[in-house]
Length: 432
Image 1: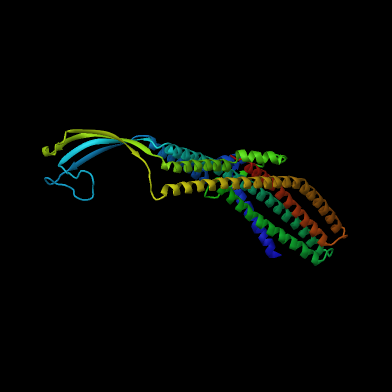
Image 2: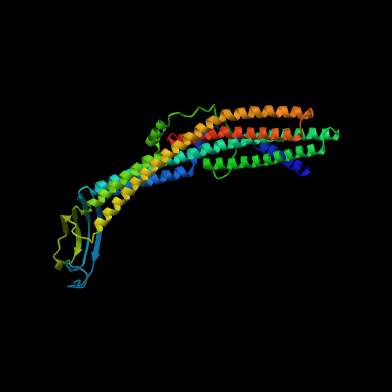
């Protein structure tokens, strides 16, 4: 008994000290403010945004094939008289003393749509990455909602634990005094003290859970150091939507993961078409011009040069490489289509489960309210019967336990339902 009382005193003092120390610095934070703070600060969203920017840069890289490729050149050479390169080249092997500067220009004329398909594939992939940013934002918002309601739940459970300790301490004091006056037995005192110790353990656990909930909220907001906030309770929670079919249709239209995956399917199909176009010819043009201010007279070179031409590259045989590349791209496109189908099936399941959970949670609210009312009435009757000597301490302690459990169930039902509504909104694509 002495140890239990010391634990209670220690826990109460720590609670008061913590409350006093932070009362002047705790910031009030509504759910909407928490969500905006997470959107601005969370690294998961910032990482997804960076990947989307990288995908846009890749699109510009692919589109560069449409534009000319220009290069400047500075060339100098010195060779032994009448020197020739004898091995390694099939072109003219003459080497002259010279210095020249100029530029060269090359331009793709046509590859019969292959570059167009590459650009299309890259654009679609970039759009998919943009939808992934929306997905990351929705994930973070859901985490914020869950952790926000987790803190409110922990605070409410702490209040229940504190009230339970206070009430059981009062009963313990009364029974102890009655036993001292020989009105109750020492067994009654023992039962009362056991209940008091159990409530003190509940208080310690509730305090620990509150600190853990603050850690979860801090992480959801995107901060590394733990922070405490004065959270605002939500207004009256609405009933869940009744039409499951419309919710599934809404999810199919709005879920960013689904939109992203559809873009990935289209991107893979465009890439497969580009790999098919490897068999088509490639037409390109090239030009060069410049000056040769220094050269040997015997070389017969002019002081200026200029040339232009074109080239048509026609694939004939390359060891079946093009066919293998096309087959690979086609198989990957098919895999993306099956991934889309799997995602659609999972979304239907998740919406169904979230809707069932929200409806079940809403039904629990009225039931637990009745449970608390009946448990409170039962405790009042048990206290009256015990004081009149009509029942044992066991009946009283059982009534106390029933009320505590009912209050805990009411807290859990309240914040479970709010969390389930957030999950349902996430599943149908409303958390964007």
